[in-house]
Image (cartoon, rainbow, N blue to C red; front, side):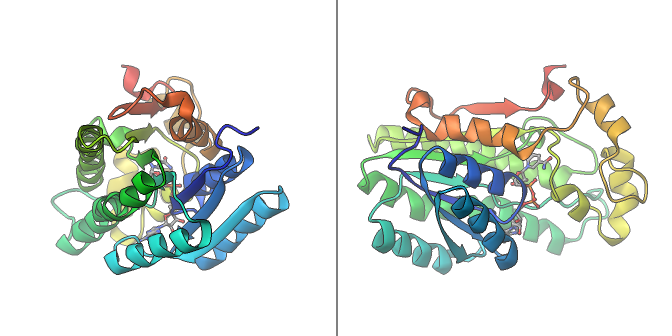
Length: 269
Ligand SMILES: NC(=O)c1ccc[n+]([C@@H]2O[C@H](COP(=O)([O-])OP(=O)(O)OC[C@H]3O[C@@H](n4cnc5c(N)ncnc54)[C@H](O)[C@@H]3O)[C@@H](O)[C@H]2O)c1
């Protein structure tokens, strides 16, 4: 018997990295998973990995900034599975840039994906979770939602928003006795494609001066990670997936509105 057997889980941004890791781990623990992303090829790979391991996965192309698409996907889950119990709002981007150089377009795009996307997920996903008897929402924030970082002000603004939005929604759900728990997860440096995507064009030099990215290499510099992280190495998507499965399962039934930090000790000092 898996830890989330019989549950239906929706994971956004599941074509890559932490979202893929969470989808694989939830499916391995018995959930039927619905994976969504803008990246259809990556999504297919995630679903293939789950099916090869004997799990159940269905895919939907989704841009989390599109509210109408959220409504379509929640309706599709209702008709295909009849219920939703777990929602992992994971899709996100990171734009590394000094606040003095950041364009309003980049600021707004990052807000739209990282914050509006979570708002739409909560707004349209939770009613179906409540109607299914209850469940768990896991919003992916960051250590950048707990501490400031120069060169990441725009990203910190989005992840700080996710942290407090999560707590307020948790209280609303508790007050309405919806039997829906809502928590945030705060990863440290995790080895995913987000780091390679973070330094396009002119932002690379700013980003590399404040982030553990090797100068010009567009990859995480192991020496810089060792300095930033007490455990001395980057985490894996499976390290975050372990926390997501715990929050998604009934093992965490008495936890809501809290923040689970998985960061190799980064925020301990
Ligand atoms: N990797 C880290 O070190 C780290 C640290 C802290 C927090 N996080 C957070 O974890 C989450 C997952 O990041 P990751 O590291 O796995 O990165 P990733 O780039 O590997 O995965 C992010 C996924 O989100 C998808 N995505 C981007 N824009 C989208 C949109 N508009 N609609 C739907 N999907 C979209 C991408 O296609 C990609 O598949 C993000 O919210 C990120 O901010 C990552």
